[in-house]
Image (cartoon, rainbow, N blue to C red; front, top):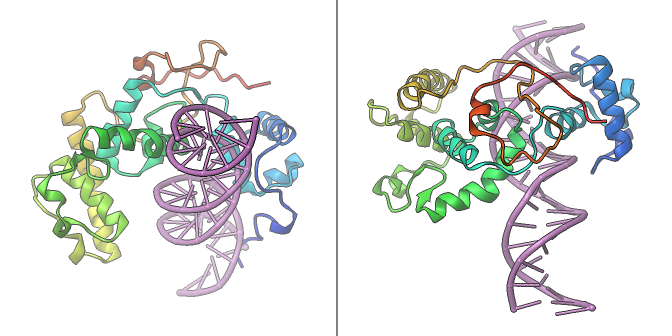
Length: 235
DNA sequence: AAATAGCTCAACCGCCGGCCC
DNA sequence: GGGGCCGGCGGTTGAGCTATT
């Protein structure tokens, strides 16, 4: 049957990570690389579950993380990608080297949402707040449907309305999803020729010029042009 | 200076798809 | 074929910090 549990919850730490735990995790991954999160905590001498280690590494310890304030260009890119992809933070993060999905998600909720609202734009639909199409009749109760609808509306798909209310089966969602992804590629290339939404798993691609981590002044061109790797680990 | 409100963000939770046994 | 784990994801929480009263 299956596999053994990833960790014994009774013997794992929770909450904020200590410097020592960070050091252990960094040292282990530096020596053995990422992967096999299940066995990592034990091997690294950590009283954490693999999930927690993975999250800590991806969101905080990874050497290619940018940190620091988001630039105006990043803001606009996030808004543009969100209008196309909805709350697909991992996909959005994939287009912003050095940024994590968690970071972008937090930034969206704390800054960009407010920014859009101040501009009179509904952050969920990317339409003006007083737009008639935002009437309750067009709202759905299912979150994913709402996201999908907002994506489609923002893409101005010429097939007019796709009624998700009547297509609740998994198959329908699957088909629509595939359709949407294909559509997204086309529309993005049409409207944002500089955007490459072809997603692939790849090593971190943010190129550190130096170790001064305040990256708020980083040039906007860099994040659309992944560089060769030059990974430096924090000491 | 103290109390309160608002904001930020690291970390957790629960779910899902894919894979293993 | 089916039960169960793993890795990954998006949503949510809450501790700590800052601003305001």
